[in-house]
Image 1 (cartoon, rainbow, N blue to C red):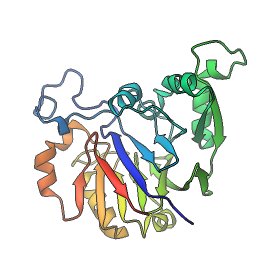
Image 2 (image 1 turned 90 degrees about the horizontal axis):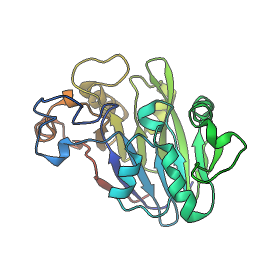
Image 3 (image 1 turned 180 degrees about the horizontal axis):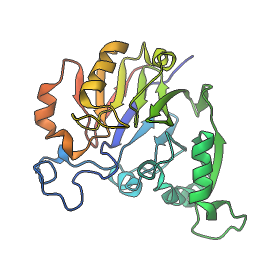
Length: 260
């Protein structure tokens, strides 16, 4: 399978409440360091020919404006939670300028949620100002968006199935606290992996920082970035100093080149 070179932009690296969290005056939420400000988690994936996002959370509009994105080919979803899906309506701006529908890739449960939450886009009555969506149901079978092959990876968010994705040498995993051995095998051989690490304390449905570090060591990927962070993780610069070689805390606006 041939992969083009990719540029990955971290649009957001925060958990569902974002950082700073509303009404919180902890040292992280009041930090002057911009790396401690985290919008809801999402990435932008760009090849020379294709541009798409993984997830459209409630900060999607702000993220597109910040990165000055003028064209978007597709949206790829990990799962249906609000902090990963609720900004989908704002693709209507891309519909307006491209004069075509947005390709949306999601597994069946997420597609069902999209049809429910954005029912007006599927009512059969077209009127100005509604998003135009072309849904594509995905499974665990590999598929292609533009010129970028995609390998889905099933992970578990407590009992909820969530999709991670591998694009050549780069793997993106969010909202997980368990991965079956057969799915871990899909990650092995990556050169860069992104994994959610909510905080240092145990959580019911997210990897802790320690668990994420153990997973990186187990699958033996040389470079790792941790995302989907809460304010409970601590200050970016302090946590960064505690990490093993090759492992880092991601931050909003971070860009990574992937030479597939």
